[in-house]
Length: 274
Image (cartoon, rainbow, N blue to C red):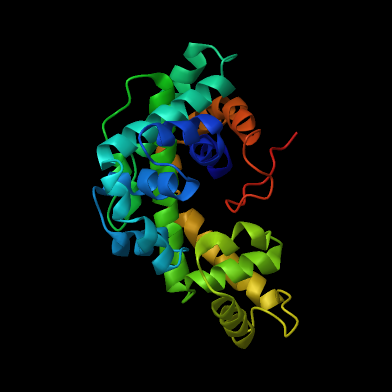
């Protein structure tokens, strides 16, 4: 299900209309829009909670954006901009789908999101507390975003439990084949990257040449399994029939969203199956 609702959320990072909506409220530059839009459900927060919740960014990079962005746009303005941009993007991508299709998908996705346990899930809980959208695409995007952030909170918990720090997991992704160009922009220095690779080698995740080991792959899979287990509740409550129906409804939306998501994006979404 993640491969079906994550693309719906991800248009907010990659579609030109989403970028334009942030710029319209004074958030010029990709990272201003990113940090303001994603952090806005938390209110006018400073850098420290966002460093913790977003996990993978160097503290000094977050501190360059927060709390300074709130002088450019309030959290309420940032929230309106991110929803407006996402809805405009999805409208452009799904114009061929009938409204009945989008309404049914939004109904089911909202039902799933309504089953989330907020305890310990800071970003998931903050998004779940936002007002319900007025239109099907707004409802669809917000439910996808709530599910996405809830799953991300659980993933961060699994990484912490595995004693992995932000630079280590980024270095591991690069070792698995993620383009380093998409991750080097998160503010860590070359020395910090090198030290992280050294720590992964010391714990047996990487060889001396920087290649993933079988032990590393198994340990990483355990993190992914824990993430999936922590995200399973909505689908267990929704049940197999309604989950299958939702997957069917989301499939053309996700495929359309994939057309604006770079193949090598750091999100790591697999390509849609033919």
